[in-house]
Image (cartoon, rainbow, N blue to C red; front, side, top):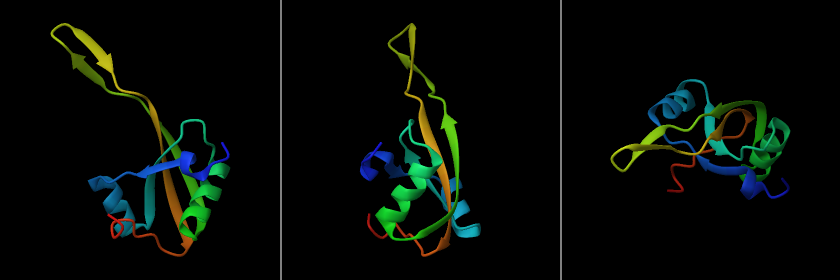
Length: 96
């Protein structure tokens, strides 16, 4: 995992993540499944020019989805990172 754009994929824009950002200043990103906390910290600091104080990761399981009448498939598993900043601010909603 060398490329920072492969590590941090996209921000998670949900009601829960927006509430965490407003109350605690914690940002939520979808990250590569093979990335560890050190790689995620370095990638976010380089991408957004901020100082990260903590990184927490969660492995999210894929959901079951119906495919056709009888068969059931699953979406892919993915990894989520909760990032707390010590210096700086990220407002990725202005970029949209």
